[in-house]
Picture 1: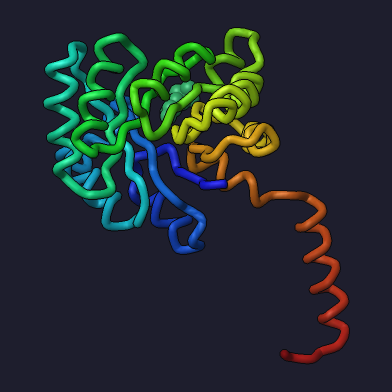
Picture 2: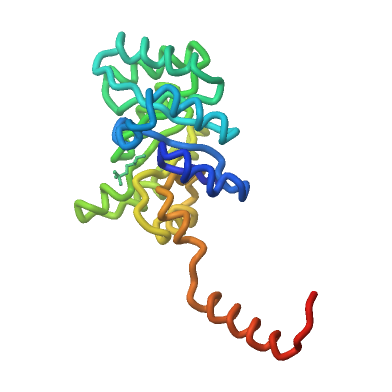
Length: 218
Ligand code: G3P
């Protein structure tokens, strides 16, 4: 399973890149807007590309095919690791089809149903991003969509990777892993929380307390 960080904050990315567990990054207009004081968004994206040797997702903001295609080409030319994020719309799927024809990596975002994911896969998307948390927010079971997509896309051998997004807590990661998602993208706080367990803390404290009785050094 690949771990992506869902952030445009380079400090957060650096913290866990050193552990070798960050396989990629996803950004979106909201996440980039939070870093606006760090300068031009292009510089932020390029700095992220310099930190993470993996897919770095950047989203188009155009609403028609022509604009999305043009924006996608511009973003892709920035760095070889840039993946172009495109929203699940009719115009967006036309842009996905055209960009994939140019050899540009694409990720279809704001996906909330199996039909939307099927359309993205048929358009040639390299990744599809179902938003688990936002489905949970409206009292539906977001992870069930992940489970359905693993079956549906697998039934027909689509190479489109399922990139579970909008994850809000460590249990979302576990559920998506059990469901078979190829990738999870998560905020820094979720990745950070995955390390924590009170019994680990308790066990370390007990080991160190007993070791102190030895008065020895390794
Ligand atoms: O990658 C999509 C993600 O940033 C959306 O998360 O918590 O706003 O639903 P959230």
